[in-house]
Length: 480
Image 1 (cartoon, rainbow, N blue to C red):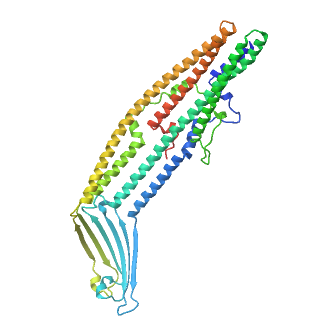
Image 2 (cartoon, rainbow, N blue to C red):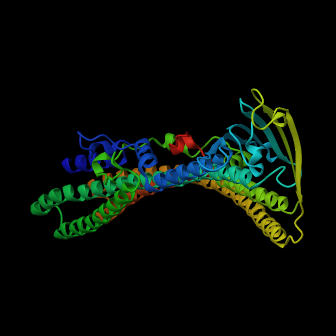
């Protein structure tokens, strides 16, 4: 009777959903999946690398905007010897504008004394002279030029870098989820084998007493020792698998200094009810179009396509004739000085420049090359969309099948436990033999392990689905 109670208690622990709690150190808190995801998002090197690349892209974008900074300049001179004693000073500010490739400028100059005739442009009234001018393009550089292209290209490059951060986080968090649940499954497997070994070890004491009293043959002791050896092998193998899984998990679970942390078995979480795992295998529906819209790699391709179109526009711009117009107004201030009354009038000047590129092989070659690269990127986008559509459909199939296999595995656990319990009763009544009882016990243990593997497959399928549909909440990704 004592042997029977020991066996039933041991298998009760084997089948209880919260069996993992008994193995935990009371001073240790179970490691939950959210803690792993938070650590990997904050400290995983690939994510930190992508964040550094984004900062670099942000600096490049700021640098490109510098082409449109306000520029101030000044110059002056004074003749300290010779026939003429003229002194002149001029300051100006220039601001590039994006529409029409325009630039606006303003200046002020002031002179004193006499200048030779070849420098009489320096003469001003006593209060100096102010001027305001506007330059703009009517053909080449009207819609785009090198500076505007670089600014837009840098902004798109920054967008791609931001998307690369999200794409990296999705991949890392997906692998972190899989590593965590694999570690949990390996811990559950070890617990099953340890409890199975415990049953055989406890039974050895009872069998020794029965053999001593002549109630059992000596062969039963040898057979049970064989079971102990086989189950010790299973425990040793399971410990190895758990250690390897913990090492893999340490790549994602890191401390505050970003160093990997190898978690011990005492932090394994309690088992989850079957209904909760079933719910994991039933995600909210996401349409294919919504999944396509969420995927960052498609957004990266769209940004790359837009960059290529801008290159085409820039190359086509270089094939156009140049026709630039200039408007300038200058007004003298104060009374008439050495320059005479001609410096006192309000001057309004309209000018233009025109040029035509005759040989355009460079521009045509750039257009041809950019259009070919654009076509290649558009085909890549189309194929990637088809791949994602197929991926999402297949992942839904995988989720549905994983959920069904989990239910079947749970049924098998229930059925194998009934068979084990029944065989134990028959063995105790003398209607069965030790060989069949061992088979029933190991079948029940294997069924439990198969259920844990089915649970792992369901969780992995859900992690893959969450990554495919960019469910940032379940992946533990903070959008900032």
